Amino acid sequence: MTNVLFVTLDQFRGDALGAVGHPFVVTPTLDAIAREGFLLRSHFSQSAPCSPGRAALYTGTYQMNNRVVANGTPHPLGIENLATVARRAGFDPVLFGYTDQALNPRAAVNENDPRLRNYDGVLPGFSIGCYLPEDQGPWVWWLRELGFDVPEGWAAALRGEPDRPADVSLSSYLTNRFLEWLPRQEAGWFAHLSYLRPHPPYAAAGEFSRRHHPDDVDLPIPPVDGDLQHPLHALSLAHDASAAPREERDVRALRAQYFGMIEEVDAQLGRVVDAIRTRGEWDETLVIITADHGEQLGDHGLLEKLAYFPQSYHVLGIWREPGRGSGVIDDWTENVDFLPTLCEALGVETPRSVDGRSLLPLMSGGTSEWRTAAHYEWDWRYFFLGRSTPVWPHDRILSRQNLAVSVGSDVAYVQFGDGTHLAYDLLADPTWRTPCRDEGRILRAAQEQLQWRQEHLRRDDTDMLVNERRSGVWPTIASSLSL
Image 1 (cartoon, rainbow, N blue to C red):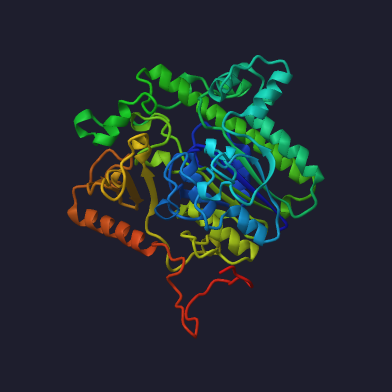
Image 2: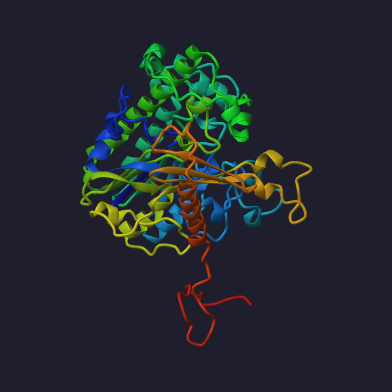
């Protein structure tokens, strides 16, 4: 293996590809890559929306440790990430797309640093092949140069994708930039392709917008009746930004467009694979594919990514490494596992900050000890941030606006920051609509989550002692220090 291709497909649900048995979505490229490698069938992101989900993915840390809780939370200082690990392994990692990691003000040049104006900063350590900020400016300018009348605003520009040919889509633009870059590289390249699609607006490009007729798509899981809804669920259903359309025809149309977006980005990945094959490097390229978070897509009456239902966090996961073998892994796997797995595959030391575990033992036939549940977190304190932001420690309301979820084989357990909880009986009803009434099972799920949180307390300097023997695990000390 000499090359690394790390792909993120924004908001890609774990059930929306052919390899896991979707009844009508056609994803030949993803399916083929999965057959050549390992398909992670029970794979979860660790947070939502984009910045928190990506912070966990890039650093291999849970939100409780990296503390990126919203789009706009600064990226943590002093924690290694995907790009810095790649550099330690001898690569020059190059970004195509975006990483949505806001600059930490403590690392700013000064208070007027322009990077402090938005959250779509570049993860430290990456070189730039093609940077696409939130406004998608380079793509919009390119469309206008081609003669297309494109409205202002990234969302409006994307809503017009069905009316333009697919070969000028945002995903096609990003693929083009990678394909222009690739021929100039020698063996030993590392590229991160970060596609926005199938992120909303729900409008697929060109022919892909017509791939699925709304009448032919399935309907989502309906919400429980109002008197059975948790207050957070009820509040989300009342919010225009997170509530699914009320009319069935509108829900069907939205889902049809989402599946079209998935098929389009699969086709773009096909172009990438073909180019690597043409160079004779496919059998020397490690491929990792996942998403920062999932998409409700009407399930439980919701859209986008939020709250505690699994559709917002169950994502695709594929690891394809020449010589490693292939198969399907049904164990609970998480996005935080990719960084330690990559470290082991590249032969570099795994950062002590990492919370995830290497997947290589699972790929070699199993391990005697593995997690018994998948975990993710969601924090909504950003709704309270403004001119009158509550100030710690006198007002602690912000630190209660969060939840943590453990998804096990029989119970899904949700712990809220205010001390309340939910538990769903997955044996009786895998759709998360039936509460678990068995106090013993609930207690075991709560204990599992508590142990998970205790086990993953930050350990930066906990396993060393400053003494003559330098006991424990010591960091590398710089040769000269300014005291």
